[in-house]
Length: 265
Length: 341
Image (cartoon, rainbow over all chains, first blue to last red):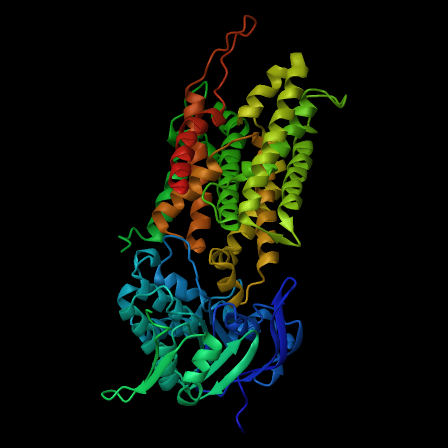
């Protein structure tokens, strides 16, 4: 580990009101990798992402960005290093894709600065990478779910941060659009060397796309490693409470994690 | 696809409309002065010696106030709609207009034994407007946070209380009632240069500051998480924008009374033509506000009425607030139906 970790959580506890959700969590990210965070509902997996970006302040422990305490950064300073795509983002009706993506430059321009040549370039390249150039002048509320999610990814890209955190980016999408977004994110990780963290519900997606799977349960990390090491029949039973079959698809060579439940009895 | 009349073209169009209405407005009155003579008088080269006095001394302050009040109310409404994420928000909703009116009514009714009608009035309106705004603000924020829904609900309650207090005061006012009524509806009748000087500092501070807040406004229009993730401190930004909206509304109300619906109509019209980007919505709301107010005041002036009071021999201009309400109220109903559906 000679490279500086883009984000590191040390002994982090965090929660809402009286409720402690994360309890002394340690997690470091390897640069240029795609990490999936999975876990049952209410396990705290979204909270991990929120703590990483100071969207939720920690109760105790330290969050390090590029080796520095996150508290030493201003809010725009954090936004220059880390992009976050929340679970259900919303934009006002009538806002076009380009107008949304331009907002991604806020951490660089501030309230009164101009977009500038660099900013315009970042916006164009974000639109190109997400395949939205032809949709740039369309209002976001007129797009399909997948296109809309791509527009939000484009906003995060225009931000120019090297780390991208996505909170359940596929939840409201149909199968085709789920893969569209996942392929896009995976390609950003590979071709641009971005560090990506995705909170995922779907273990099949986690197994197929992630370099590393972190399983969170009850505010703690219960398993962490390559998908093939982590996603075991035993873990599916103890953490998710379902019976599952795990095998390799003979055609693609991909690992399939198939929860079968208890089955009809 | 946005079929594009470009923003520049729209701004030019609205600006031209405002300028044309401005000249027409200066021409209209007991004596009609055609536009060419108005322009010459403005340029200090009057064709008729009386034009100079009529245009520059008597009518110019009212027209300038129309421009200022219209843009202040339009911009104020646009900012409030951003802060509250609600297309129905306008200065009346923030307690600002209502607070200012209550203070004015108390004053005009002589409740505090102060001389009236005097030049004190606008200052008292200002104080009441700020108090009303702050009351709503305090009732709305919980642990430093303003919740949009709570803000709207609070405003409804505060407005109901202030409105009924106003009615009580008016019922007790007796003779003073006649002086209060036109002012309550909102009017530019009889405004002079002193009124311009009173509102000017508020416009000079509020309008540029409001326009400069466009980028913060854009981030506030996203969901909270996205705005914060992009590095905007949400609560300070909301409080600042709300404060600016209150400053703009207070400045306007202090010289024109309760002119409703400009703050509702202008931003909604602006959004209908340029979409949601605040960098376009804010300036266009101010411009459309000018156009609306000048046009309505033009209509109000040409529909002068002779009050059915035996002693009055002269004709009285219709208050501009009444004209705007005729067009604004139905729009409110349409917007309300759409947002409930």
